[in-house]
Image (cartoon, rainbow, N blue to C red; front, side):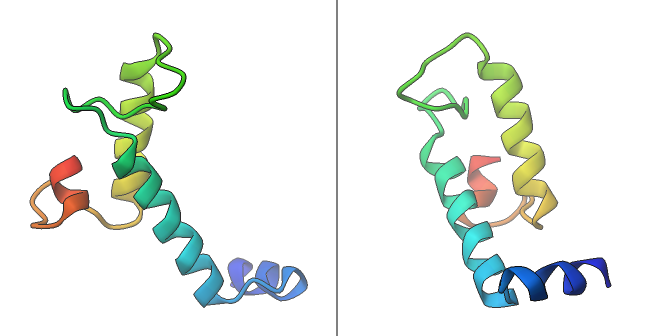
Length: 76
């Protein structure tokens, strides 16, 4: 109910929200390093564990699970 009320004034329909979520998931998967850590490759700061944990929570919050036979599932 809250989401519906928030979408109307901003002009954000379900299609735009889904596209944004899909783009964010893609960014997280592309940011994964060969060692499994997920962080911004350009910055390479010492916050990799925290960034990986946040990325895992983000992927899981939109329905991806480690048992999924998908790129996102494998990233988890």
